[in-house]
Length: 216
Image (cartoon, rainbow, N blue to C red; front, top):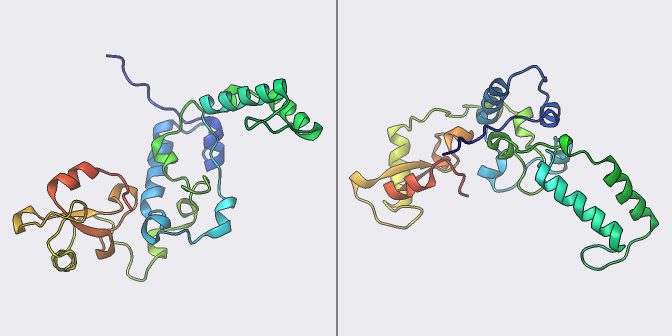
């Protein structure tokens, strides 16, 4: 069985995120994960983006090399046919723009892959890296501070059990005392807290199936 190739961090991504070319990949990813787990993306908890237009000032990761090559081939086809994919014709200005892009294209400028720990911090709407990674610390969110460990206090568990009425919040199965599990809606590994608003009741099967995904 062929060994899976470990994704490297392309120089373009390093520059966008403010890392030096001399830092080894493992050090960059360790530092990035530390930054990304101090707090979580606000949209995961709030269900909307509090940053608004500020998102557009945050870095925008490049497409992968495969995507870039496909787009470049599309531009070549447009130049050959004189029309876009939907059949619309285009003028001299757009033709000149396409020609410049094709001429300047270098596949080596694009990463083969983007490490998942970095890619998942992109805005799901606009694509930019979430500003929370650069701007926020755990202590900036609330006076009490974010409960970052996995430990869930007994009083929080009791409130969650009553709130969720002994019912798995994923499959709606009614649970006995020995079947109750407490799931982090936004996983700890992605900056989620162990506060009541981020805890829900699940059965063992649903909790195990979710793993470290963000299901909102």
